[in-house]
Image 1 (cartoon, one colour):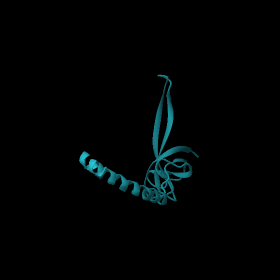
Image 2 (cartoon, one colour; image 1 turned 120 degrees about the horizontal axis):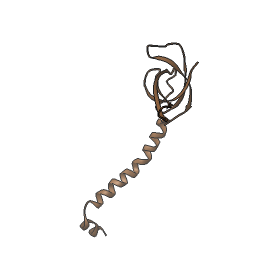
Image 3 (tube, one colour; image 1 turned 60 degrees about the vertical axis):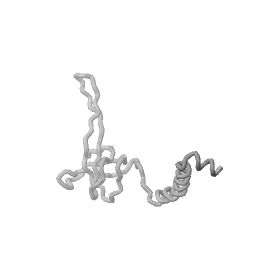
Image 4 (cartoon, helix red, strand yellow; image 1 turned 90 degrees about the horizontal axis):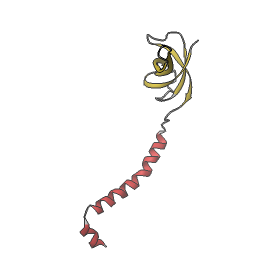
Length: 118
């Protein structure tokens, strides 16, 4: 049974991901190593994989025309998005943005406005 480790390139399909597997191919005649990549369509039952994740895929029975691989393990997660943390960070930045716009409006009045105020 073949096993590959690759990076998730696309997860836009339902229960399917596109995994890019990179390997090195040696050309002995020219004494050169080249990076060789191939994309495999893999089955992701729980839709847990995100783009950029490093996953292990195993060969299985044909699931569809292009899909004969199954994601067995997520080795390393890439950017994990947490909506609650994003909302909290946005709430903290709103007051500082309001202060910045007030400072900008004061400075746009020119030299005379600052001389009158001070």
